[in-house]
Image (cartoon, rainbow, N blue to C red; front, top):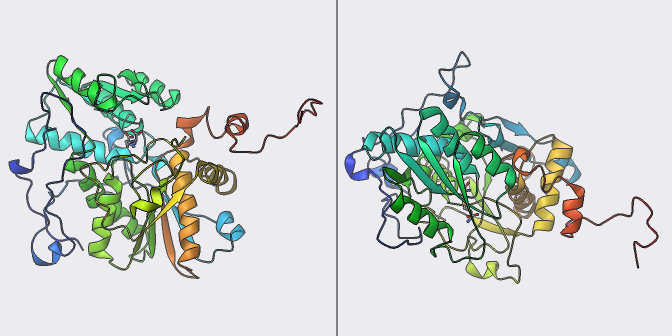
Length: 393
Ligand SMILES: N[C@@H](CCSC[C@H](N)C(=O)O)C(=O)O
């Protein structure tokens, strides 16, 4: 199905381009991928020796990554008068709990092959959490040291999981300019400069991120749907999933409609004017940004939808309550975008829609699943269940 790829030669070895001063990871990409490249010459991507589990005993938990279930949704489509099939790609069922694991293993293995990552080194990364969990998890298994730079918006649940794997977690405040001393990229840069024998994998610029989804996640979806995928709905944080899945599908299934879902306050969506809003903050973690990371290729997105937290978080709660899918915040954005898209595109009986569900409820046990948390943020109407006389004063 896919073209035979080139061998990964040293010129493709990625090094985070650290200068003396921190810079934003939104440099122009160097990847030569173009829509019809695979028809004329070999893919620029290296082939990954990735073997999915055969269902027998695994040599380590790392081999349990991927092959996540694709699950039919039943009640939500019915309640919304939607006739097409909607399937959730359950990335929260990866062993570390998110979509970040294939790509993290790929980044590590590529760095090991290139010799930029050697035994005993310390890996430093800034993350909204899921990449950090995946990294801390792989480091625990492979005996690397790990320092995670985590914005204070990210949940305590995520921090605790990383610490359980043995990572050091350094919190940075929101609102600091990203490349300032206390900003997420500035702090990461400083820690790298001052930690001997350290490396930054740089998920925002590292092509191995997108290529993992191109080589594996996209192929899984195509296989699970027997080659009929009419629509895929995804979001972007680094843009790795979007780039990898988008590029592979434009090659193997060019009629698949690719939809991007983006929370208000983020600036990924196109055209730019649909991002215009007074909303400055979203509770959603892990997707959305105001810079477009180096690896993010938005050219394969056919249409973007913007979502408010009130709709996304309530849809995330419905995914749990009505479909039994223990999803996280960003899944609500993507599913809310999917509901709008299938209606607007008028997808009828027999059409197949895949909604990528990036992480799970475990990361947000104190957040959107708690009624009071939702009510405090006016995301759910506050109900006077105790009949307080002063309620409406
Ligand atoms: N700009 C956002 C999202 C970054 S994407 C990171 C990725 N999802 C991760 O798990 O690290 C932010 O910084 O919060």
